[in-house]
Amino acid sequence: MPSTDRHTIIIGGGVIGVCCAYYLAKRGARVTVLERDQVGKAASFGNAGSITPDHPPINKPGRVRQALKSLFHPLNPLYVAPKPDPALARWLWIFSRTCTERHLEHAMAALTPLGKTTRRLFDELIENEKLKCYFRGDGYYEVYLTERGWESAREEAAMVSRFGFHPEVISGGALREREPALNDGVAGGVFHPEAASVNPYQFVLEMAQRSESHGAQFLTGSEVTALRAGGEVWSVETRSGEVLESTSVVLAGGAYSVPLLRKLGIDFPLQPAKGYHRDCTPAAGGPELLRHACVLGENMVFCTPMDGFVRFAGTLEFSGVNHEIRRPRLEQITKASARYLNTAANAVIQSEWCGLRPCLPDGLPAVGPLARFPGLFVATGHAMMGLTLGPVTGKLAAECLLDGQPSLDISAFRPDRF
Ligand SMILES: Cc1cc2nc3c(=O)[nH]c(=O)nc-3n(C[C@H](O)[C@H](O)[C@H](O)COP(=O)(O)OP(=O)(O)OC[C@H]3O[C@@H](n4cnc5c(N)ncnc54)[C@H](O)[C@@H]3O)c2cc1C
Image (cartoon, rainbow, N blue to C red; front, side, top):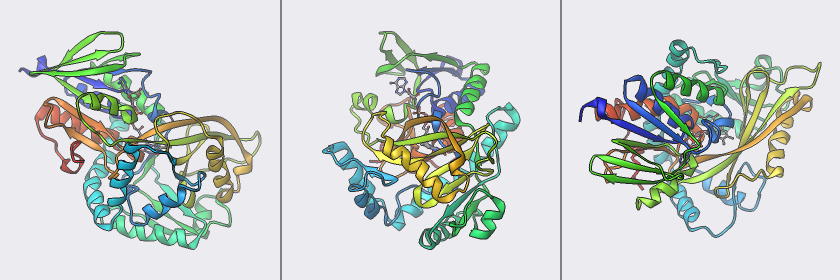
């Protein structure tokens, strides 16, 4: 089939779907994005905005013990709701089996080329497409109150250094010189110079606009309810009964991707992991809240200065697909910031939000074709790395669909690996 006759339908207008649209359309492919709501309004809207190329997956030795403890502590940053749910039980079983040194090495080896490429792609996008998304390429600080926490961060820094990243171990005093908002309780931390940050919603909107200018079409309010393969043509049905045809389909539905795959007979072990944010500004006349992006290590709270506010984001709550804001969990984000920042009392809450990260149990995303269904490309499961890995995922999807093979090894991300 001539490439001009080829048409790709992308399901989902989050950061992953929009990045796929951009890289396909930029290469001249015909692209239609179907988004059931509005572009960028799900998980991609309110995340911490951090681009973290050296971030390891949460699957690490010791995590199982931590997760088990959290069953009984609903305010723990990592929380698993204790309820009978066979899909969650299967997820936890695979998760527990992959919390090993060996798997961590495998995951880092697989993710590192994507992390390095995506960081370069962000620079290219900002430079060439002049994206207005409050991009800052000045890294972030991971900070700890306890010697034990700092020690585990130093171990992790040594581990990621072996993969060619350059984390810098810093004492509490030196941290306070660089970031005056950190209080005397901070024992030490690690600086991640390869990291960057953006306003994530602005990034998605800008990428959608650039995709459109390269010819991509966005249909919002279009929920895909069924997918059917027939020879070289896919039929994609929406809730209004409309049927669109395409030669390929990219499934980028984030945490909501499971029902469509189930209709194709695929048991995909994806679980939503809810996270929250609070956006804050300083009280009138008060000092600025924070100069640099920081992670409050023991509490897993990301604090990112954006355009005119600081976003405090965190928690990982496995409680199924729901958008209920559990206030005590949200409060934990504010309480944590008061333990690390001497400016916390000066923070005025401007908005609150929750969103669902799409998480696979081995901590790796699913990026690749499904062998049983030619023309179907899965791009989801990016967990806490979806913004970070958006550009490289889009580039890889375009390479697979237009060239037949990707420029990076994506075998570890096969969607049918479970
Ligand atoms: C609190 C929090 C902090 C985070 N911080 C970071 C961070 O600092 N850095 C980072 O890299 N990542 C971070 N993440 C993770 C990141 O937000 C996600 O990995 C990423 O947004 C996932 O993008 P996505 O496009 O796959 O999913 P989404 O953004 O959820 O988009 C999926 C889209 O698909 C649409 N859709 C679903 N099903 C259908 C259908 N059947 N038909 C049509 N449309 C459909 C949905 O409406 C939605 O718009 C964070 C997440 C949270 C919750």
